[in-house]
Picture (cartoon, rainbow, N blue to C red):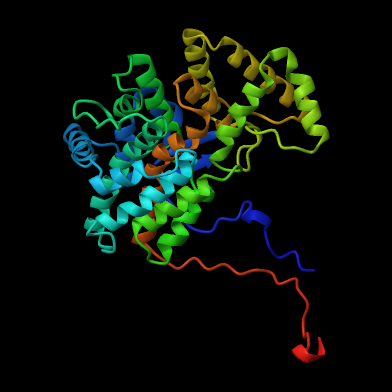
Length: 372
């Protein structure tokens, strides 16, 4: 058998891109280190950076914020649709369906000019958190909360979830998390979005396909699974036995290891620090201590380091998001990156059509049905 292929496309560079650089233990958006963006920037500014290849000026940033606020209302038909979704549905299944449905209410959905795509990008990003929080309110039998025009993107997200304006620490924590989750090169969902875009499908189709991919347990769904693991363990003292039992069964310990980062994910220290601050402030000390114990044990036992899903889940949990909603929060942020890649794909498009290495039988004779 030939080995002229790469399983999972590992280390295969399939296209040029100027959006994100992953180099060793470092991550850059358009050349700017993620640590600087997490410390100094905000989500809207990072959106502009990803979409337009540079940081915005004051007027440019104000204009983007204004356009996002002006486009964050969802059609009443979509509100009605939310009310008719099964409350037991997974938030990502609901979001995938709702984003696809949004295309039916956008008269520019199939227009692929740059100007039309730019307007759709604003509309999609502005509405994503409204859909996420709207479904969460629905499944708790509460009224959907309209976004406010005086709040930032991150503040509005929490406001629409809770029904009250968030405190400064919670808002800043979510802001930073959105920045960290906004983009990450050719991960599975982003690559899928580019494949769909390369076929000259519309932006809603590309985002819907990315959402479907992100839902998977080996991608965005790992954030939910990692937090569920911490809650199941429950106590730092229970960590060794809990993990040993799972490893003996050959089960995967979620939130550890990374296809790209072999020596550590640069987003983890930032998320870990935020998780510690939130957990100590809000009374989740045991969950944080359990996380530390799991991280330490996995490094000693398997030489595996925590990835973004591990402490990201703890941050979302401390912020009050239900565990099965974590991936949808991830999706709100990553929509910014997906759109940046969609823009880049449209700009220099080539149909993405890889080949497979055939390993099946050859020259098999057809047997008529009467002789089978």
